[in-house]
Length: 330
Image (cartoon, rainbow, N blue to C red; front, top):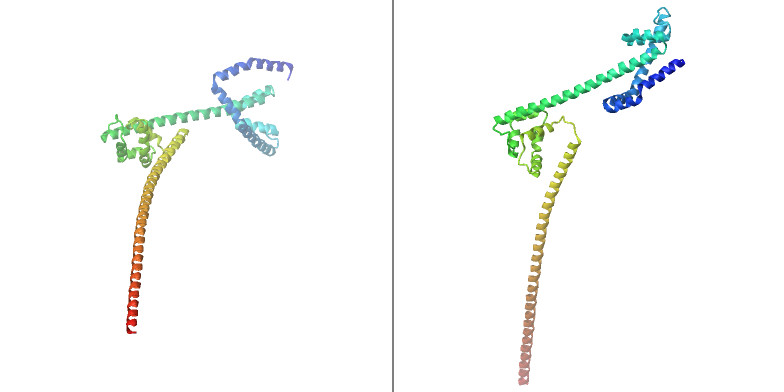
């Protein structure tokens, strides 16, 4: 490049005024998001272009060997690659690229780079963004239609069954409502398991009682039904709610077990106290019986001793009478 070209490039850089571009990016954050997307996808895009270049080079060699210089398109390997790239892949831009390339050799890589970046990369990104936006809008509209359809059908069925949609739904009415075949069909139609909803009845109304609410409003019932769909993605709020329910269930179970243990311990203490009193009474009665038995034994022994003494006295008297008879005989 000559000195004139360098000066022209410097002028172009001055015209860009990068500070203004930065200010524009700050005021329009979507542009910054797109640039970050290009940066994040640059490695994958370069790999794709490298594979693209390898395929073009391989087929350029094949065409060069088969043509043997007989056609103008495949005189050399670079000519064959240029033909395959422009005429085969980018035919809409081949005429323009060849025309500017004849003016200056530098224009060819600049024009091809511009086409690859602006046409292929950014246009495909635009298609992806449009697809994502359309998908988000379609999802939102579908959700709105589902909510409207559920609320309308549920209101008609409840009014037909004699329920007042303007007043709160009690626990008994909630259970009765979910057992209606028409309500079951509607609830199953939006992807909600009626049995799970019935199992959650106790927890739902316990939470309402804690907040001071007497029942479930119609709007809250519709919102609860939509939140119980199995296709809903799990959120942090759902995890926290699950943890709260688990803690409440564990606390209730622990409280009931502790209350039962307290009753059992109280009964056990009472029985132990009664057994101690009964044992103490038996011990006291046993001591009185031992004293009476001991007194009877002593009296019996005294009576035996007295009888032995009387017997000895009788023997002595008899012996004395026998001695007197012997003396009389003598």
